[in-house]
Image (cartoon, rainbow, N blue to C red; front, side, top):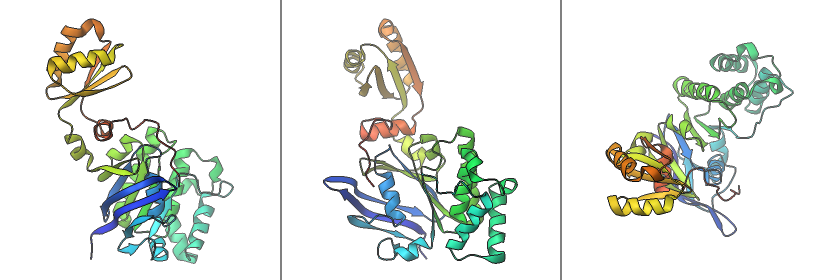
Length: 314
């Protein structure tokens, strides 16, 4: 049997004259936690909707456990759990009632359904909240219920769209622990979209996607290792003029955005020391850091992950 859970080959999706996806290809191994990282409007949600059978691609194709997402959509839906960015819980029902009615949709009932609900309530630490009205829960607790709902029918693939949007760091870490528990207990493969770098760091592998194109793929460590050395950030009021002088004098290349000069340099502390001596009166601050996924994204695309993108149409 194949070890591939999800495979996308040259996926393309157009909306009028605009390409929301432009020839995206990647694969996800079984029981991986895999992340689609990119800015809002970069193509993540379009890709998510294709994989969840809600949107047909214009070109290329995708398979989930060997099943075509267009030609075998019904069979794909039986094998996936989907957690959308927008809440899908009935806020006027209790936690248990939401889970029970989800079970009915998948033909579960009686003792097996009650046992599965009890199992998930325990795993997601919701047992003492089973009778609470969902509308009265905190954002973190409600998100746990959403994921439990998506896992109720024991899907082989769990798809999550921006799962930690609006959650504080503690609730985000808690959610990640729950997802890892689902992988261990049920052998589920997890594929999620996010624009939060810290969230992507916890995945096994990821792709970086921007303006509908795949710009990088690998583990967080692999991607960051492509940055040559450490990153120097220089704050200066005359940033472009200062960068031109530094680039010519030290034969280095970098980028300038607003008042910030960004350089990549092995043994960055040595260059930073010289800059402080030679241009101290023109520099407001100098920061040296290890490469981050933000640096990788900037290196691959020429702009920040937080730049304002075009509005994504789905």
